[in-house]
Length: 491
Image (cartoon, rainbow, N blue to C red; front, side, top):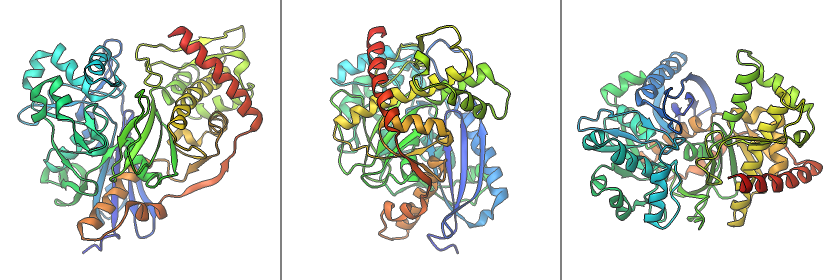
């Protein structure tokens, strides 16, 4: 019998661009297996729409887990936890079957519904949140609406396929748009404003540190693990990344560089932004997670890669080298990087805009540096808002694959005017899933153990912090003024 706290723990991060998995050996504090599977969005949809079929995630989970269990002794796996992209709307019918593809966090086709809900609720409801997607289905697809019986978020759907149980937890639920983060409960008045039927479509909320269930026979076959293996509540990718990056106590600020960019930290009480730009999320450990989210980050650099070096293995290294030869400020070239609209600032219909174009500036090096600078400046604009709300940002931990780029680290450090440190494990969401599973199992066994006491020793940083270059801080402080003025002038 596996002793709780020993054994192996699986974490899966079911994201927008792919699913990544790790296996944590808790006793040695090491990652002993890892695997991944890439996928994309459904193509050919109308402008603003961003969708995936949930079966795409399930196929990826099956593939990733089959690779993981080949690398370890599967009988030693004691639990698993799921991290998932936030805000997606998974509509299920009476039989638990998916009615239509899931509309994702980056879908801006529901901006009209988001504006209507904002007026109804008397506060900002970002376009990306789940609420507007539900209202959109009611308005635009009445036949599908009539079949709707259960509403899940992406990680909840994976949990359902693993456990045959409908559940949701406060962290991911706080990104629906109709959740009271202070009470950690759904606001049924706001839910009913969409349609009274929706109140009965929401699953049971499980508390922090409680399991979503255990592997059913179908779930066990899916992941190749024994039936009855514990499945933790899981959470949204930002909530799980917070666990996997050590933001389980106040004072640790994390910047996640993924398809979207996020900045978040643990808080012992709700942080409410009257302007609605900083999300007042709950975390997945019983606390809160004030969070800034920008919709455009690595997707912008990916566009440059695809334009210049689409089939080159070391494309990012080559583009980074070319960008390093371009001076800060990019010879006047400024990229307002809103390729998918934007959440902060709230500009769902904005487009990407290049300003200051001159002969010789449309090179790969210039455009790659302009992408790094434009996305970092937009992130810095949001961080200013966090500081205005009293959140201290004196140093940050970087997570995500782009955190490995030395030029981006330097630009971010200067834009944020804070030292940045890279975490040893880049897949913080998957690590968070494994750590949450371990924590849940120990609590389930009757131990009174805090998540930070458990996670902190298992989250390691890599190398020395990158301190902000004072000259660059001045350059980017002035450039941020121009950036904001141009955004306000154009959009």
